[in-house]
Image 1 (cartoon, rainbow, N blue to C red):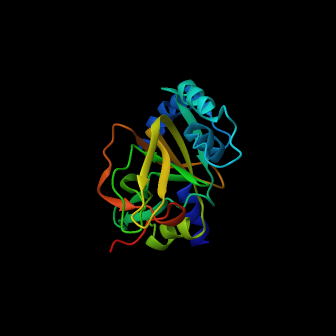
Image 2: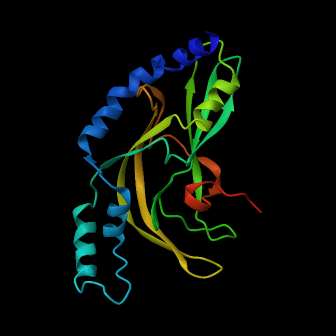
Image 3: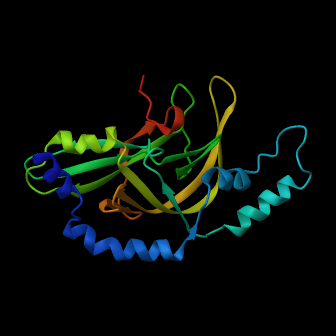
Length: 224
């Protein structure tokens, strides 16, 4: 019964979140919904490599980038794909918690990132600043209840962003990493089974230093 009670408490939005829900909804409603991130990245980057490339590939990519210049887009990162989310500090006394977001959203061979990365780790993965999203739970929560959100993959991310250009970083061991830089306007984290909010972040809020390597599949790598 205690476990069910604590789970129910998680679903209650805090007063702070209720104050900003309308603002996120306005941003979302002003944006164009994105069906597939990987398809968008392919068309936006337009690498146009290989023997059987359409002759109009480059011009198509240029037209696609021009179409989305300055345009806000909205996407949902499902709980199974939200590998960029990790638990931060949890304070049992106050119920305050932090969810860390590494702003590297993979789409097959490419990725969407917060801004243009300029450095890589020893494995050639882009270094990016962490986004920290905070929230507060009612009294009585335990750290295990908070951590279970991540181990059971119960967090979904909704993101509003504006693409800003293509980045390319050479890998030290050869090859290159490519992606699309973006201004991330806002991130809403929700409890996946119900859609209730867990935390909100807007672009004017600071990101955290130091930068973190993305690792394979968008996960953070270990620093060497």
